[in-house]
Length: 469
Image 1: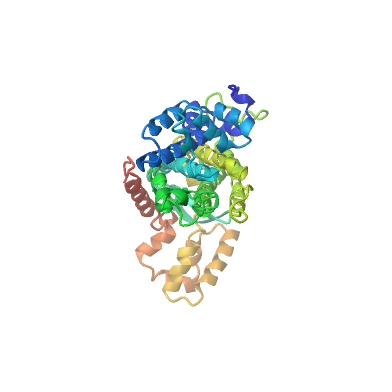
Image 2: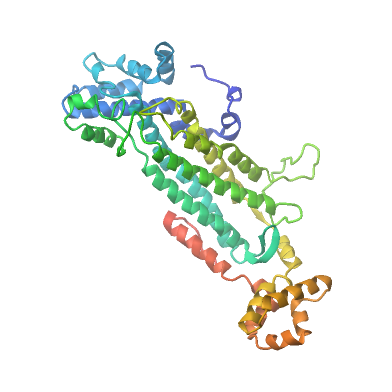
């Protein structure tokens, strides 16, 4: 197969989003077509190893097959497939051509194509999870955890429905995503371990292997054990769809967490909010026509990638359906699964880079908080009034907020000039009064909760973080 100019490739994942050489090299090990052939060949090798252990294949067969697949190229297999019109038969033919006549009969012995295909896919997705997906996501989560600790006491106005609510801290805002991503990381790890293989033959009933083995299920387990996999309880010509479906769902739902974070951070960069910013290189351009623009391109890119790949989960659900013991309606669609993994890793890498350079504008955080700091104490005021026996505290405070909006008076000042409410005010303790007089203190346990969340994930994932405060 000829080498191609990367910019001649059709997929943007190749020529734009995953073109970093080091990252591409990592991805290629598990997600490329070369990797597909490599892992399929490893399954064929596992079969020969068990046949040799059982004294069926010659002892020398293992070394012969190892040497054969070491020299095997994807180009060879594709050239053979152009003749056979069958990819696994082509793989088998290429391996057989490189071994002795005594070994040839035991390549693919009692197997069907999807014993090889499905098992190889489960194996490479497990390896990709352990060596790519989890490390990239943990690195991202660690960058968020560091920001959370650093900003755990930084006041920020909370927002619900796009409106100012009650105060939080920016560290607390970040801790949400530390927690959500941490839970997704654990789910991905669990679901990857549940990926299964099969060696049960053409319809899953062990028809061929039962000719030679009194214990075909044990034989299956032995072959899969060579690869570090387990069989499912039942398979047809293909493995049961649900383990892969659940694994891919864990990836897509993780992608959604990344997209939610990106969208939140993008909104906080709006000109009228401007609480955070992306690092902007000296020669970076934000607009082709407006030189002053500094666009949140990285966050927008992640959200855009998510929009492209999130709907692919529908195809995964459709692939759960296969007529009777097997049809081919997932053979093309399942080949695009590596693209989903690649896009997720690309998004995680991009967010890690931009998060490590996040600029927090404390002046704008304070300015935005100050816009409504006299109004946001409506919640503690109404709760304290109710706690001190006011019969309709919520309505009383609602009317005060309407009055405050029409005047320059604060809620505290309006309480002082309202005889009925002033009597209640005087019953408040000094600490309770301070919640009304100093709205910046009304952050609940945001800082403590932030630190608690970060400590939890630091311990789980062994982060090297310095706890502040």
